[in-house]
Length: 163
Image 1 (spheres, rainbow, N blue to C red):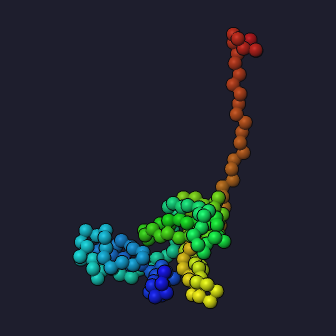
Image 2: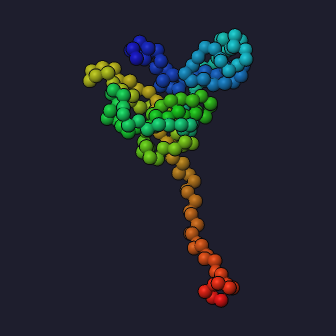
Image 3: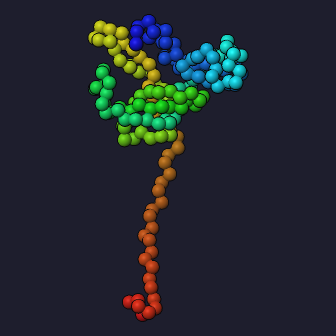
């Protein structure tokens, strides 16, 4: 990505700034200028309002990357996921602070501001969002009831040992 493009995209990359259609109320991220969902595409021009995403959502699907792209070799294995934001848009991002074996569909996550990469030792450092699990410690897990042994059926009558 060029430096000029990086700086143009900085506001929505850092703040999760999207837009909401004033006609159908659909939220989009990244921002766009026309609502593709609305049946009145032309009427949506100029009617997309700035909208701040909360950064919270849940994992819709994911993959664990074992063979990393250049620059990400030190992070393998890492998790890339599609996260459906609470407001509706789906975002792609890395899930951090969780082991790949602990990731699951439906995991609640929150966007977190992290370093994405850097261009050499004296180059530009790129920051952006990644996702981290939301730990809900307010509700303790329910204790499992003790397992009762399964009763063994006994047979009585002809052919049984007790007959």
